Image 1 (cartoon, rainbow, N blue to C red):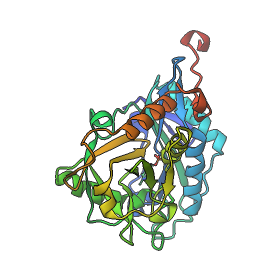
Image 2: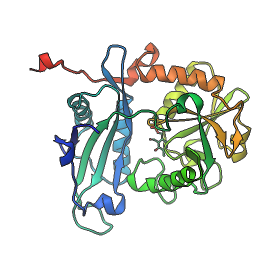
Image 3: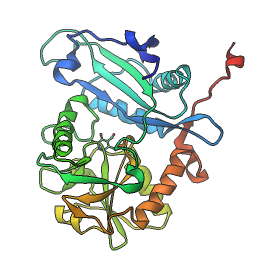
Length: 312
Ligand SMILES: Cc1ncc(COP(=O)(O)O)c(C=O)c1O
């Protein structure tokens, strides 16, 4: 963990970044958050991937749950830069969290304060060492993805993640690295923290916005890259069997980056290794994340790190 965490306008020491036990979000899940990553670019600077898009989604999620963030988008961006710089980080995972703090108890959250924290720490491959190269084993969950008639799949809200937690526990206990959830209609939705892509006969498919997905920022990046690379990419509902019949399967997400799936429900996907389309997209995507592809450098929000000399 890192030494400094930004809380409500200032950096505090890791051990002092505390909340009251009557924090509303702790009881009712009334928080929204983001998962963001920064990568060291070829110039040796940390650069935050699609930072503006993550901040926009944080504000959208907050708005959907009637929370007014007491900082501007520019202040959140600056606070994130400060957190990275003060912790001396280059490549890191960043977790902004907006939550209802301690206030009146009960389900009406409107009088509880809205608090903001931003933490950052080094975090390697989310789905385990070698996952990006070898791929992971996944299982379709018995839990369905939350649907838009009872919660808000488009919001990245803390309480909603109980759905992902149940699916994750089930898959890990059964010996798999990840779960794939179907939506309420039985179409393929997404992973517990990743969007899903299916390659069939050279065409790349991904579930549409209406399949209960979180509108992933890396999903969007990979769709743009796939089109730039000349692939056909189609958003449509996918049947469970199409996962088994796929030539290649992969997932995208800030934590998982672009991870191939080599087995689904104990069926080997394609040849059981990272397929050629996955390999190509992953290569360009990793270059984009690290600021190595000039076509996508507008996606990298460079954090200017003052040298200790200049700062002194
Ligand atoms: C449920 C869920 N789906 C998809 C994603 C992928 O979204 P993104 O690419 O913006 O990280 C995430 C991660 O944020 C997630 O938690």
